[in-house]
Length: 252
Length: 313
Image 1 (cartoon, rainbow over the protein chains, first blue to last red):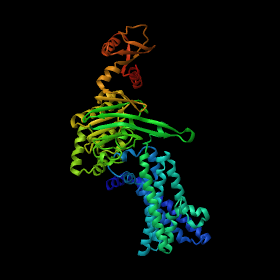
Image 2: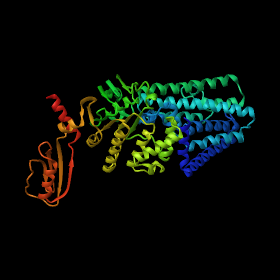
Image 3: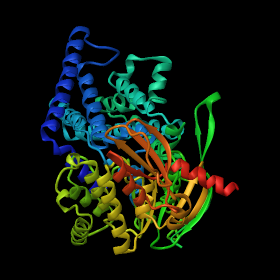
Image 4: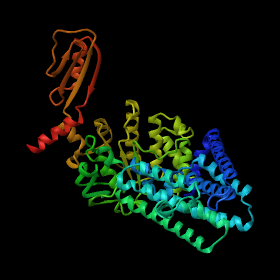
């Protein structure tokens, strides 16, 4: 894995101008989000218990977690298309765990920009005492596993459907929904955000822990992380038996 | 035996709901391969060649049947098997496009557990064998397809595999690059006794590389014999296409049959068991205002049709 990851780093670093441009573009995008939340809460003050500081922490958590998942394990967003297009062949020809190799194979500089931005935002606006840093790190780790596991499970559906779009749809759904406080939703929608599309665990739950640490919510976050990661890995590993190397779809 | 395939079968489900159907890509394929053999797996598009080779490398799981490669079941012991086999897919890359091949080889060397000294020695050996040393330090994205395939071949040979699976390795290459690639594969087999299993739908790949040919069509084995015998039995005809500088009225065909004639082109079929191609070409060059001339094999589809005809009669 270390060798694969090193090669992926070298590749993303091969075109340095592109690397820095992408990183900077994502910084600008994230700063626009900060401006949006600041202006929004300037106008409305508070929404269902969420204030400006909470929204900024939500942004810090989601950019750090999504930046890690999409930046460091860049192929996780492409799992469905990799399966549908038969691109797993190269990974399956090597004596490495296929999933680990696939995930370590690609680094996305644009999302590394998110990762760096999220950490900086927490450092600047998150009152980073040692205790809060620990809670932030815990929240980000659970968010990484929930987000990564969800994308992996959804992408692995391509073993059954043979379609690559499903991963992209899931990515947009969970990312967009995690960009807003879960408490602005209610009823069945809120239930969905804690279960089927677990975006609440990607951003709102870690922010709740930062706001006031509650062991029960921490356990819930850890449980969701474990469950999501397990579903993702099991979906991928069992799906490998059904892998068609793209043959079924090109011949149909 | 190096490879044993026993009634291997693989089906794919395609379409949805009413359009749903099952495609039998490979149906009950059985054959064996001895160490050091050069075997060509041929058949038209969709015949099941790639599916078969991917089952034998553990990439695909069969629907039914069994196989062993170097004594291992490919799909159950894939990771262990990949240490002893090399796979090259013409349309799939093992190299990082933005990196030089040498950088990719470092990663592959680490995966295969080669230490730096062994990797450097092996890279130098392969550079010399494949005449590709000058390509190893140039980013892959700047390579031509032919150059890239040479580097891909080196990548799958780094760990000194006992068997090399080549799936359509010459696809997309120009004539010169194809010929060069074929020569390298033969050199490799002769120098290191590597067993070669090659899929192709290019007849020339088989003639230059293989000493045994397995023909499959619609997922079934329809022919398994030496290339020499197949050449005698089914490649006994050559097609000669002649471009003319100006129209001609009549000419002697020397026993070759004319299958097409227009003002500025003639196409003839020569039975090489009756008449050497060279005699016909000499006569054509002497008697006709030849602007262009090419000799080609009969299309693979015609060969397969002939095999079917012979087998059914």
